[in-house]
Length: 306
Image (cartoon, rainbow, N blue to C red; front, side, top):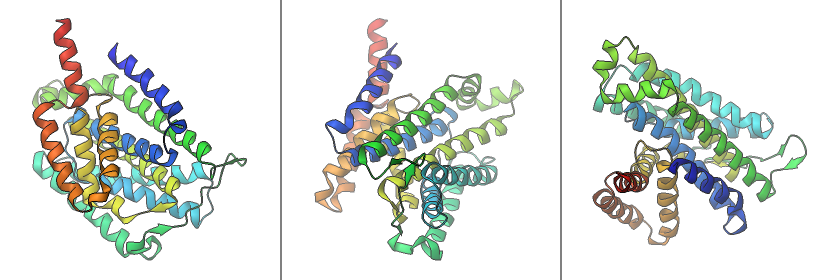
């Protein structure tokens, strides 16, 4: 029941947000929210901690930007190209990393992601530290000008809702139940006959693909693919967003992404002290909301009902 209420609130706020907030900022929040939801599918439901998800987010942004700028792809095809790249990259990374567990899995994903960061820095078409600039937004279906902020916003909202819907359906499917069983007791799931590595790989690929969808969409919004999108710090930020919102909850990553991204924006005037302030806030949230904002809210409501 609570999830349905939160879904209605999210859709209503999404539809009305550009009328009381800066559309580009809200679009940025939607991209990070989708990124966090994709990461939560991997960590919150499969129990796999990846330190390399920025590779899919940033890599898809570069590929989508290049397809739009140099190949003249229409907007949706450009986004799908970047997303497809994230799918392929996620398959390769997942195949290499999935047989490792715990900190070894995390370190392998981090090492692989650093390769993508190095390529983004060195390859000539990426623009190096300057990033890939002047990515055209183009026209949706040949007649909707995406340079119009309102049109661009509702395209981003539609992409977010589609991505969120895929994650929601995945979580509430037999596949999602098996993932949670693997997270809780991998040996038990293995003894029941499940191919654990196959399920982990599928979860990794789905998560990487949707992270790439978020990154490709972000490149179209800002008409710019930045090197910071592929940096390991971006992987750290999405972990923070997921934990603050509520690990293993449907709407927690959305709330966490909005909270962390909004605080980063509002505190940007403090310069390098932003990370220190965010760290203090994170420690406070962990101490007060041990299950995350949404997780703690759901726990207290269930206790009251009990």
